[in-house]
Image 1 (cartoon, rainbow, N blue to C red):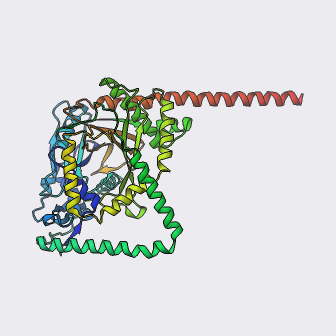
Image 2 (cartoon, helix red, strand yellow):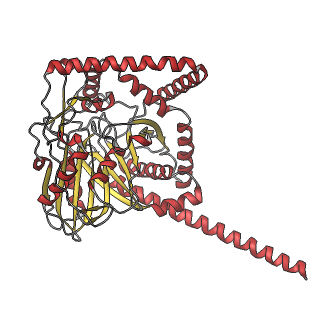
Amino acid sequence: MPRYSDPMERLSALDAEFLHLEDGIAHMHIAGISVFEGPPPGIDELRALFASRLHLIPRYRQRARAVPLELGRPVWLDDPHFRLDYHVRHTALPRPGDDARLCALMGRLMSQPLDRDRPLWEAWLVEGLSDDRWALISKIHHCMVDGVSGVDLLTILLQVDREFDLPEPEPWAPAPEPAGVARVVDAWAGAGSALVARARSVPRMLADPATTARALGDTIAGITGLGRRLGATPPLSIEGPIGPHRVWAHSEVSIDDIRTIRKAFGGTLNDVVLAATAGGYRTLLEARGDDVATAVVRTLVPVSVRGADERNITDNRVSALLLELPIAVDDPVERLEAVRAAMTELKASHMAEAGKTVTDLAELAPPMVMGTVSRLFTRATHQITQRSVVTVTTNVPGPQLALYCLGREMLQHLPYVPIAMSIRVGTAILSYNGRISFGVTADLDSVPDPSTLADAIPAELDRLTRLAERTLAGAKASTARRSRRATASSARGRT
């Protein structure tokens, strides 16, 4: 018998916010390019792969439908006209199929908003890449996934070995779409349930006042710290109104180089890539004539608050930190030390926890007010530049083993992050199978050459790697000298 989806499921407040922030200029989809060894599969074979997995990803057959008069948040409802061939598409690069043409295609596809009347995703089979390769470009609205759940979706579609089978798709039929009145009633019932759930937590909080007081203090400290970091920054050329068109570039480094840097200078993998990203922005600003000595590049760094039991859930479970990249620091080791110290402070600031608390409380806010305010703010940033956040830098851990699509190994996975709200440049970072990829998104009208930043980041990591190798070699030589001296001293003592 065909399987029906649950009749109605509401978007969370955060998921709905990504819908509200989108207009004809700001496109709120995330994406990635998976590059595979050849030969490419046929489009029918690729569609068969998707069809065999659709029962694991119900959102891929659902639309976000509004509640009348915004009396509730949008709901997920089955698309009665779902057609897989609309979502899984086919294209090819012109000869010679080089990286420049792939980046140009990515920019064009990312400049086109997803159709709100259909499920909010697309996948493009791209033939014609050089060196007998092909690509799969995945594009999905941010209201459906965050970076972590986006990677989880990728692992659902792909396999961990070359051997594969394509089971028959599970039978499915769309559930009837509820009437507008039913959506309103369901929204109000949901709001009532949320209030009841909050009320039930009060006795637990009163039963342990010390823990409650500490949690409240941490939240207040986090919100206060967040407020202090939201002051206006000096004007820069990489912030301001944006247009609807995107350009994109990418680069890649080895995780082994990151390990070498960490061994010599300390810090986490995230510290190292953020320090290199800061060096890349320094190069970009210098190339554009900005004064790097006085520049303040405050970046929003998304932080996953997804629990271990919340993997493979298609929604957003994120908070954020606000980090000022040390652009004025020229020495790469000093820059790494500055990032390391700043991130240590931010992690202890409870900013991420405060952000999650604010997001949780937004579940109780009237959807009509939230939607109206968000849309007004988005429109305002097309005219008046917000100077609190200059860029966004997202780092998502990916699988550290080879994945396969229909028997072909995935060689690279290259990420894309959307830009909006006066942010003209954004950087996405993703690790896969011993490599780390950087994807730089930019506004075509104001920052037409994102490769300046994309190329500068691995150059900064190369500088750090060379310095780290010299530091480790020096330490090894020093240890050897001490060992020889100790041996010689011991020999003299015996004689």
